[in-house]
Length: 149
Image (cartoon, rainbow, N blue to C red; front, top):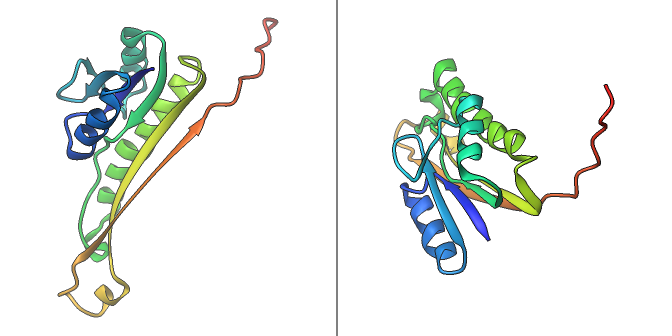
């Protein structure tokens, strides 16, 4: 399989490349490193990445700028940074990739979040809790597109 790994230079991205690289052809991508350059928050940049990569079987995203810290330290601007760069970046990857990832291919989007324990509201000594999740779902066969306008 030919797989694009966005965020390949990060800790999770390196682990993904190491694990998948033994069995698959990996194309690394990132905002400041990798074989392909991409800014996930910019749909034109995502489209350009797919154009340069050509057909692929899967996309793995381990990238996206977010604010890390106790929930009480978040501001509207810090939330918006994550929404624009991580959430909408992943939306851009999927929407732009729907017609470029092979039938039966997949998108794997990782999320790392930081939030304070419930007790953090009562104590400034609480440390953030870190969680990690990932999902992979094969793409359904797309419905035929109408050629009439």
